[in-house]
Amino acid sequence: MRNDSATASDVLALTGGPANISQVTHCLTRLRLTLADPAAVDEESLRALPGVLGVIGAGTPSLQVVLGPGVVDTVTAEVERQLAASARAGGVRTEAGAVDAGRGSDATAPGPTPRGGAVLRRVANVFVPLIPALIGCGVIAGINGLLVNAGWLPGLTPALAAIASGFMALIAVFVGYQAAKEFGGTPILGGAVAAVVVYPGVAKVTAFGVHLSPGQGGVLGALAAALLATRVEKWCRGRLPGALDVLLTPTVTVLVAGLATLYGLMYAAGAVATAIGTGANWLLTTTGAFAGLLLGGLFLPLVMLGLHQALIPIHTTLIEQQGYTVLLPLLAMAGAGQVGGALAVYVRLRHDTTLRTTIRSALPAGLLGVGEPLIYGVSLPLGRPFITACVGGSAGGAFVGFFAMLGEKVGATAIGPSGWALFPLLTGNQGPAPAIAIYAGGLLTAYATGFAATLAFGFPRGRTPRGGSPRGAMPGGETPSPAGRTPGDPA
Image 1 (cartoon, rainbow, N blue to C red):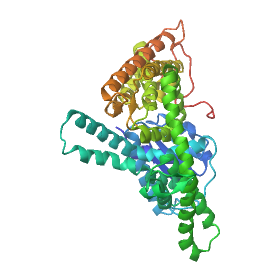
Image 2 (image 1 turned 90 degrees about the horizontal axis):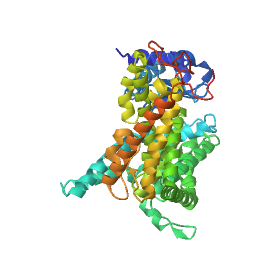
Image 3 (image 1 turned 90 degrees about the vertical axis):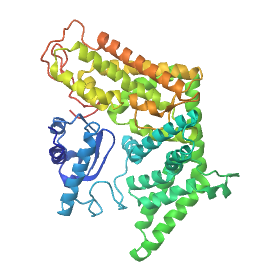
């Protein structure tokens, strides 16, 4: 029987104890820990814990423990509970000296400056908490669209439209709040500055000779505004005495960052957002099949490295502009290729009961687009099946991209789910029905190609699978790298 309390205790013990944890968050499958001392982590023992599917970011302050859907929610809650209990006993303190029970605080003490991949992960952390609302509002929008097209419940559809659209209309505020929280500012000040982006009164402001439009720059403008506000706030905190700090720091922060947003950031972010939309449309209409082949084939390595969340701002920008993101259905084909590859492993290694049990338990999540259990439990430990799964994703992406070249775009009204779970969120320039049919065809193509490629090339030639091979061992005695180890991880 699963014991989430014991798992949480073991994770805390192997990551340096509560005193080493400064922040706890999670996404659909991963427990994300911010560490004071990365060297205190016992990586080998952490990977060996029952229920842990993989470890990402070992040796860095941003550690990710892959637990899988459902499990990660309860384990995270238990980790937070244990951290809060330790904090009450005086055992956990942030660098600012304030107790931190896990979800971050309003403390403004600056932390280490992130660089490289750490910057992408921290930007992703801004958007990850928004995904549940994006999913919920996207599903409601899809249901409302079906009701409107069918002419049903005309008295209810305006209410559903308001519920589905309200969050997207104010998403800039939430992005600003989360950005300030993630980068060490006061969250409410980040939200206040980002609110300028969507305030209707900006239509009266002239910048670079033209009137601004409410929402211009979207989430990118909100993110930039909140980051600037955080920098201004930290500058003020270090220079103003306590008596003046309470009054002047918020005022200067909102005023300076607000003016910079109106007279620079909104215009610049709007140009970038327009370029993203134009570039995505050009990519699909001009090189759709090739673009789909590349995106579908390269997405699994991004997921493996934990960098796929960095695409969330791009998806969100496309949804703001066009009502859907054309990239997500292409990227979703990677998970389908993985499912096909796992089914081939299941058929080929029919005597390996341990591995087949792992596949059976991970396959439902894989069908719903959650790929980490299959990545870290099956394909990556075996080596070659990970590559052939990428081939399957390329084939599915090329299928969907080919139809984009013919003028049939497939998009998702929200981000988060993929696989079968994406069907309620699908639409396109020709409506939901063609989009659903093309997406289903892409899934079938990816399943079949991943299955066939794995059967043909996923195992060493001339070696016959035999029963009793341990999980992660190749047929014939060849041993791959440990499950969940990503390129560049320390041995």
